[in-house]
Length: 240
Image (cartoon, rainbow, N blue to C red; front, side, top):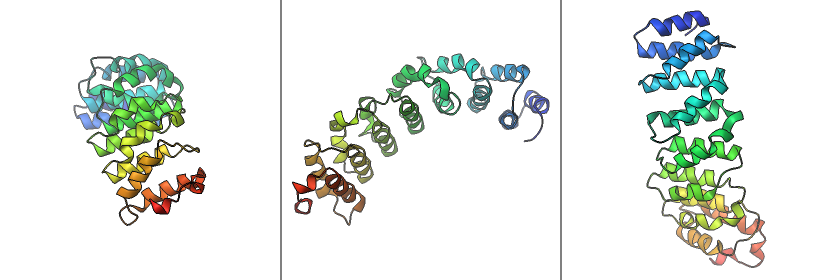
């Protein structure tokens, strides 16, 4: 939808069509700046029970008035959580990069409660930017019945700056009967450039579980780790 600020705000104010209202609000992002009048209008929309309208309004409001949006976002990160909580987390990632640290503790707490892949992934991105990823915060999801959630959790956890000291958290996932989970766990655990003797039995088990015709990537990753750490001088992987 095109138009200047006044036109778009008038459309949003005067239409009863929720999709048209959302379209007008979203179209405000085409403008370089927004006036106080427009920002005040967006703030009023944050009281709506229409979740998609709330999402559109907060996204634009936070993009154009980053500091003013902070308390509205923080409110939704407090217990009791609501459907709006899932909405604000991607918006934090997209519009609040300078303020990530303000939300860190609340995001870690909410991580314990979520079963939403998109939410978990965005929390992971934010914590990675802060060098605040901890494997132990994501490990409970490694064997989650939702495969995509487990994979996202393992990927996020691999960005822990102390990864080399926490490899054991990946052991069960490495020998998962789900080969996608096994592969991402192996890729994460073998990011370290040093040998971990406790890791080797799990890599050997995965090697046995996944012959090359079943999943060549798993064996390729294990082989690369053995070679880069110099372990190939001690272990003949072809005998596994």
